[in-house]
Amino acid sequence: MTDFNRPARLNRTVLALLGLLLLAAGGFTMATHFGRLRVLDPAATLVPGTAAPPTWVWYVTAAVAVLLGLLALRWILAQLTRRPPTRTWRFDTDPDRGRTELAADTAVVPFTEELRAHPGVHQARATLAGTREAPRLALVVTLAHDGDPQEIREHLATEALPRLHQALDLEAFPVSVEFRFAATTGRSLR
Image 1 (tube, rainbow, N blue to C red):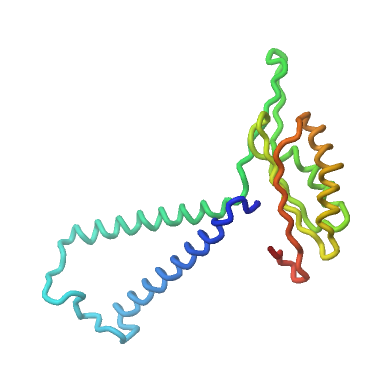
Image 2: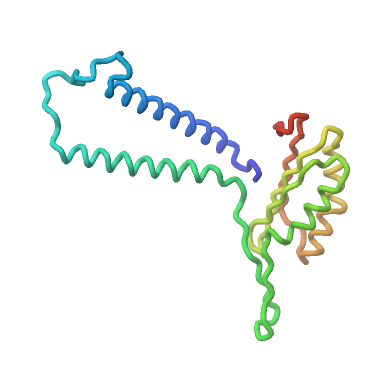
């Protein structure tokens, strides 16, 4: 959700470029092998004077390639996770009478709805991460073209966050706010 880890964007870009390069190399190899490209002779050996390796080498090579491909796929899917993990909070004041559970995502819905209704705010997303004893709020506010970040920051500090603290019955906790600006084309600028 937020860009706490700025190198992650570079990581995703490098992974995407590496994937495209490997796809192009594989396509070139297949097209050359099946004679669609006449750049190289498909019957020529890579290293002159050597015999073909045993059959088991091809199976091991294929298994390693599949394993590496699956690991790379898992790695790139992990890059898509951009928000901190949330938890379900438990309020155990009297265990004999039961307990109350509150999903952290549900707790911030009224907060984000209030923020979206504020003038100059185009979109607002919040993630309440951590435990109830050590919560962290990650907030991404997309401003409309007439939005004033300073005014919205003051609204957060004086009204919205104190209400959230009161609703959750918590003292102040760390909050990171990322402001983005909505473009006329609908894309966000950073």
